[in-house]
Image 1 (tube, rainbow, N blue to C red):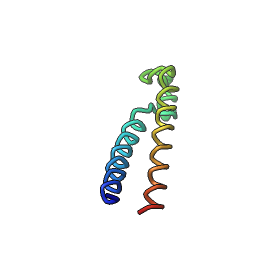
Image 2 (cartoon, one colour; image 1 turned 90 degrees about the horizontal axis):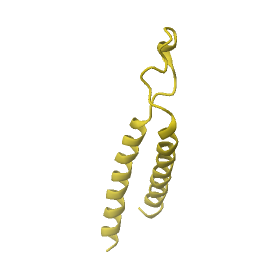
Image 3 (cartoon, helix red, strand yellow; image 1 turned 90 degrees about the vertical axis):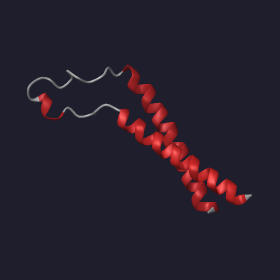
Image 4 (cartoon, rainbow, N blue to C red; image 1 turned 45 degrees about the vertical axis):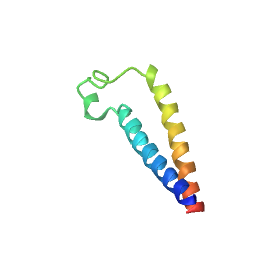
Length: 76
């Protein structure tokens, strides 16, 4: 029975890790880079309204990932 729970936690951890990778990749670039030289720094970036919600979701998923990693480290 404990092997089932270990497998379930491992599978859930992998799913959370993939979700966290996708959420981090959805974030827009923070720096302006070389585009600021020509004055086109904010031309193709998304508005900041949805960034707040995306940041919160990413933080929650990262917290779940850390808790699962700690549980795996303690009980494995």
